[in-house]
Length: 448
Image (tube, rainbow, N blue to C red; front, side, top):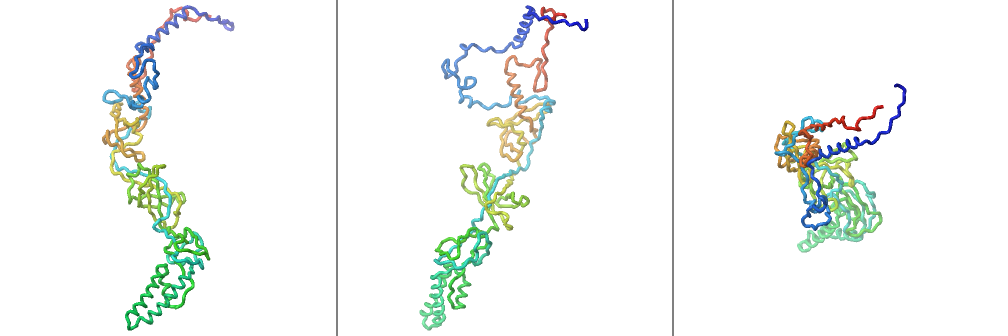
């Protein structure tokens, strides 16, 4: 009757219900028939090399050394190394294919370089005679100079005495050079040449010697000139300071050409050769693209970074590259024509490289290959593949995993899918029919 409340009576645990639960448990155990039952501990055979009761130190009773010697797992395939995968399954897991082709391969080496001064365009200014700096013409670091430009004037008592000796020898040569005695004329000329040679050894310019000859007067100071044009990198000269022979007073560098020192990893050294050109860019001016020539590869490798230094020479006419700056170096090395596949097609399996090849009709074959040079998104295949074969370029990890699962299930007794179903082909096993049990007591609900 509608609206009438009838409280449920508590269910009683009847003997029929207990029998039904026991029957279901028996059916489930029967479905697992054929599985191996683990022998009691006393029946486990002793492992060779170990006494009974010893504890194994690795999984499955193996030592770590024995496990390390085991080969890396690979794909599990059927006869002929083939896998049978339904086309719908290939599409659902996103498998893509691409043909192995033979084409020109370029390897691009990218690294970082440091701008440095060209050591062949570097000069240190010093004097070869003791004296004092009288006047400075170049008195700041970074000041540009030209070749032959006066840097400072030098006062030296020895230099003054040599000028007097030269003027005396000059007058003697003019007077005694026409002597009727050859020995006297030759002696006067040799004295003049000795004094002139002394000036030249002290780096006194010929123009100052000619000025001394023309004036006939001793100069108190003589100028010292720049040996090359460039930029003053270091300046130690100060007006009034005493200088000694060999003491550095200026360091001048010609920065119209500079070096770029780039670090190249040791595994890339076989592709680096003198004479190659590289593109050089900097964050200072990304739009400017310079070209440098590889001039030298240093013969040592840094033990900490495992890199060798490659030296590039390049022009720096505008002075944009300054010593100490960091630049990006890109070196393109042509490798010639090679058989290549995308790098995603190669499945690394320990020391082996595996590639899945399309056979048609949903069949895939795995093959062990030998790879060569890696260049960007491409990998050279040296052995195990022919031109034109289609290889799997995506989802190969999923295919490898499913193939290993299928092989593992096939090797376990009692784990065969019902009705011959194959998960790799997208089949689903049929669910076992559950028998009706209408006559079993305790399985029907009490009527309310």
